[in-house]
Image (tube, rainbow, N blue to C red):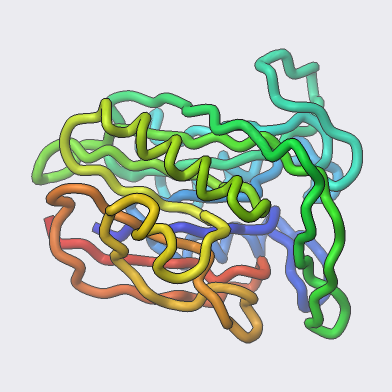
Length: 259
């Protein structure tokens, strides 16, 4: 079973500054994941062609019936005008958030609200010539999207999230999520851009890190911000890698698990 986490940056290529649906589809399909957590996903956004990127990813991976969900965090466009996603999206209103795609049958879905930082924070963003620049941004609301999937060895809970870029606040969100997951029986996998480097997520959670690879920035990775963490007997890691794709400023993180 292959699981992965990929901050897709709404399918943007830093090589030419464009978003092309075919290029995004190929990038996701080539990951060949049985379960994939996706962050920075667009729905009906003009910048990415107005499509449904979560649905596109589900088709690319051959998801099972009912095997994918998109969880919006904001309506509007991040970095411009937006409002927190409150379940009252207007028809054709742009949205942005996270997604979880599974080839395996899914028993149930749920969303865990994680709040947002109340202050503007500095964040590094891609600039020209593969350089990064620092800007101040208002944080977006954050959520986790969870599913119980059926594997050959029994049910497995899989959670994906994209935590705040605000230092300290992301750690609080992670602890909050772990607290909510204590209510869940059995093994759990967490897939996501946690915006926390290296071993910090394991220190804050007590969970196991299944892959240790630098994932950001994609052109010259220096730090691991994307993680796959495990609680309980999820299986044995057969292989792991951080893979470059034709889109995003993050590498995709992949783990092959024997269950």
